[in-house]
Image 1 (cartoon, rainbow, N blue to C red):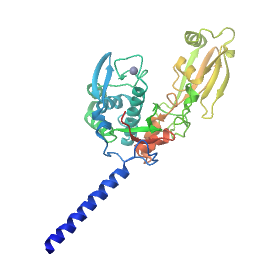
Image 2 (image 1 turned 90 degrees about the horizontal axis):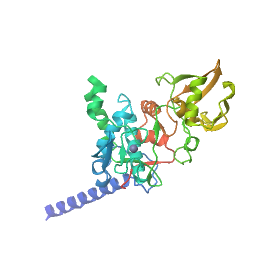
Image 3 (image 1 turned 90 degrees about the vertical axis):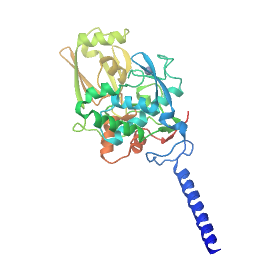
Image 4 (image 1 turned 180 degrees about the horizontal axis):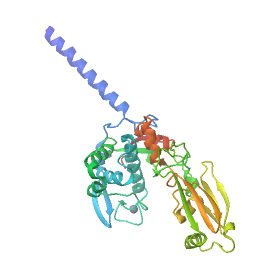
Length: 334
Ligand SMILES: [Zn+2]
């Protein structure tokens, strides 16, 4: 009889412990709706539909559509978009950002450039993508180590997405910032609550080619500008062609008037293939010299900034939440 009582008490205890553990597990799993500010630990259990392996993508690679799961796709994006020598948490932040960006694009109906594919390997349209063989050729003796490192960055963030209002965000990224990022409205048409100016820790010592110089003869400058902006009046002395440089509060060029045509700083950057819209310009002896800081449009996550924050001890989830204001990291089943 005593034996039976002991077993019953043991069983009740066991059931109680199991129920407590299960409740703890659910409490720890932030949902898209709970508005939790705390970043997720990696490797959290997710519903099957939210796992990378359960999400099939149609990826247009060199013109041909291939089907693959999200994890395989993200590994190809990581190989192409971030140096594999970067810190593990920076690579994980990149995996989360690329996953989020892809889901955002799919949710928005994809690209008109490829109606029968969810994404493509053209970095000017979607994200760059390279396969294992191409990457191995680039990495040489480090190939096995790097491939495993990137695969870990994807699997350890399996299913993690940056969310605003319960939906994946436009998780854009770029190479390096000039002290801070820019708001989306400074570069594109619309401001977004999660693409705001934030501090970024790059320095000349920590980023290769952080400062760059681009020089154009007046004839080269004229030809490039007129190809993009035929209405620009580039007659007379070149010293009067560029006027009214206005900087935003991130100190990037917000707008500039070229030959009477008002352009955004980022537009002139694109026309002249400058490395960033953070520049100064001088005109001397019929030539323009641009001094440029950083690399990329300056909106969203800075990759070199992410790497420096990772060295300082921030987790991938903390890094993406630093660069994408007012967001949470969670799972999305859409
Ligand atoms: Zn595309």
